[in-house]
Length: 375
Image (cartoon, rainbow, N blue to C red; front, side, top):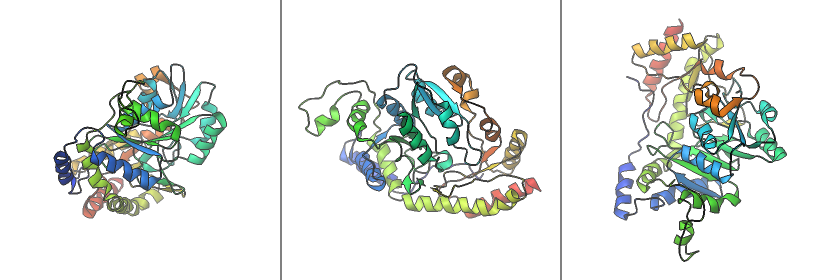
């Protein structure tokens, strides 16, 4: 079976986990948690990076930091994972869904302004497949209307937009280190803080609403409950696992890009004849090969192709069901404007196997059977 995904393991994970055990600080903000945070702060030149237990929790922290409250509105694409919306719905916000661009599957930046009202507080661009949204347009809109931008860059580690790392452009950025991501800790995430005014409060929220971080730095003589918050700190064991992968980030990225390019070259002929569509990468975006997908004619053909490939031990999957059409999406949000592309494009998309260490012959086998299907 050619699996759809295999979690990254580089070889040093066990060694670093054992080292964390020897160091004896297994809870949050131990040696390896700090090493991971420093890695992002140095590489991406961000004000502060805080590891979290998931990208979901990073998004929830972002919602708390910008003080989302009942009646506020937050703009995002409907084509995203439920966590993007949940983080703000939990604070009482109305989720305003905007249609996507069919070429990148990202939020259509030209439709955002029509969705802005006097209740709008934030825009949440989602960088689908590690391909950047049009951040210059989004940041200008945010400045014009006094809004926050929170990047859902769950899939975007090592991707850039005009040379700037995804997650390091908006006021806040959120990463995922779930086992399906390019770099993983099993479960995990990070909050990137690009606006200095959020740094101190973010530490407090993450430490259950206490000023414990300031206490350990010797800035206060005791720590106490000073704000709302929760326990968003990952174990240092998780961070040790992740750090082994960050050390080899370039190697992992290059390996995935090679597999992505094999797919592209092998399937571009089918795309040129109109049988399928393959990913489009805008000129200003450098992607991280988080996924390679194809688009079929419709949902019927997609289902048939997935079943056909499974017969030959090739596991492929489809992706998000648009949130605006879900039960909770209709309760906690609404669509702004027309759903011209979100539903139809989502029903055509098939994700192909792609992970670190995927063998070239396995990529060739996937290509071969896709070609046979369309013959």
